[in-house]
Length: 112
Image 1 (tube, rainbow, N blue to C red):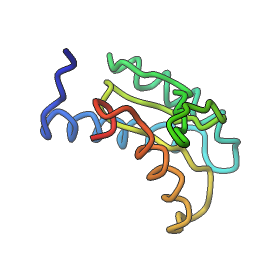
Image 2 (spheres, one colour):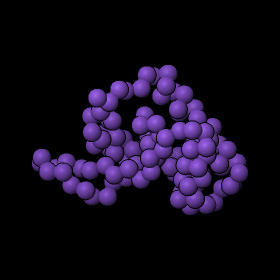
Image 3 (cartoon, rainbow, N blue to C red):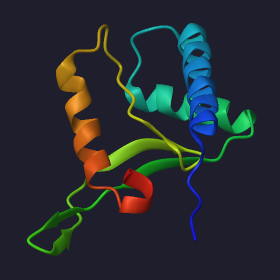
């Protein structure tokens, strides 16, 4: 049975993701594609000893039928933190909508 991480564990992973993201961006600078930042962030997090899954498929269920329609989560770190990378100058509310939708479609042991 899957044991869910505590709030403190999730916050610790989130801190590592945030800190790693800042280090990657400081090193690479602005203007690259998301895929470049993703690869470097994965490396940074793995060097920190974290388990990182990349491009995790999220199926959509419609009328009881599971459809693989290409939704992906950029990174799932320690099976606890979802990372949706954006290579933009400023985040806007519209950037958060796809992440919320993907989270809603995760299996319950992951999405709660």
